[in-house]
Amino acid sequence: MQDFRNLQVWQLSHELTLEIYRQTKTFPVDERYGLTSQLRRAAVSIESNLAEGCGRGSDPDFARFVQVALGSAAEVDCQLLIARDLEFLPGNIYDQLQSELQRAKKMLNSLLRTLRNKGQ
Image (cartoon, rainbow, N blue to C red; front, side):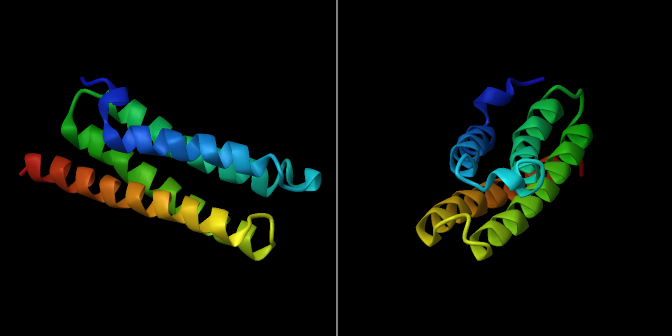
């Protein structure tokens, strides 16, 4: 069992979550239980699944949680696009968040490949 805080992908996901929380503070109040909540929860889910996966006893278990984290990253991707299109996020902020998210997704895919290859 490893400490999730040592994973670079967790560190990046954590920073992304914090930035999403900061940016969604400016979303319309009537979105508090809609897009704001969904986007925050999906972002938190990425890093939470990495943490939980690190606490599991085997690489196949960890890989399953990394796969769930990838699903949450896809949710964040979609929700950021919605926020941009509704003009809740300025284009430059969207681009910044999108860049961080794509980097995290690449790292998650790489981690997943590594874990799966260990099992072969």
